[in-house]
Image (cartoon, rainbow, N blue to C red; front, side):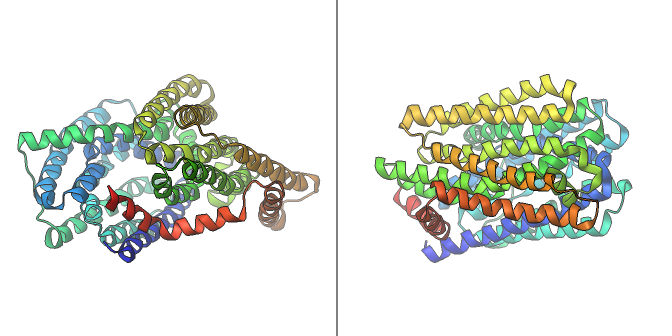
Length: 493
């Protein structure tokens, strides 16, 4: 496959991801403002709850299908039939279990209705065939599906959702958009890639499920870490408190978006350097320096001005979430520090250790949430997330040091200290001023202080040598050539 095509695929997926993030941000802000904390909490709880069942329907067959089709294209038609057959069986089984569970739980009527509506999420998960196009390295249709689905969902939300009474429509819109786009992509695949259908041969189904099970486990551990707090809050606290926490959780996820892009750019370079100890060390340390350097001002700015961020995104109704947001973004800062070792373990074929670490962290998060939520509610859930993220960082550092003899976190600590100092100064400057409640004091000045804090942070980090000009040049190179690098690695295996 030509390098130009690889780069085109990477660019298309990048654009689709950017569109999805932007439209998701707008939809989140609009839904929170229109529905209010209580209805938004019902929606967030239902979405978090159904995600576990959707994961069981897919059962890791998306990543499994991509891998198998890419390595053995001649087996694609038969493999597609087996995967879709397995998904249909899982959809029926999981769907029955899901309906039984939500029929039996003791939740308010509106919550139950929202959860029934969100069974659309199980259907869309079963129908999505992105793996087929990813396996044959035709990312254009996937990018169009993802971007169009997100854009259509946002437009529908902006038109339909106007008040808390529209919570049922808000529950149906995103999954309906995903389902329609999945069906359309499936019809396109049937014409252009391979005939769609179902195979129920026992041996083929067993192979698919057995080979996909480890992927399912990895996805489950990540999902537990990300969603278990919302599910537990939904059972233990009021819908309003859940809504406030869900809103802060959305900002927590968005604050890590830049880091995920950077890690994706570094992954091929880390894999390529695996056989050269000096290059491995240099690439890993550079990854740590860059990713923490980029993530620190994002997180420090939110921690310093959580009230302003909440007002801008969600409005005054969610202002009680300020301490929750500050704690979650502290966890996001630790997550930035975790991204380099997490990426390295996969790139250096130590994914079993990664799986063990994720399992330990998921279990710790569940235990902490069970302990803290009943007493402290959303604050307790945020503390649990922060503590679990700290456990993950410690375990990852230990694994990389013991297995590969690498550390490299001193510059990261320097970046965090510089960020803390810069934004503490910005926050202190506002506190020292006697301000009123006018537009300038409430909206404009905090933004200017965020800009000033970022500028001061850049000066401090440059002065102490936290990041180097060569690091940024390397990042630009990696971003432009990651697709080509990944193809070189694939061709070489």
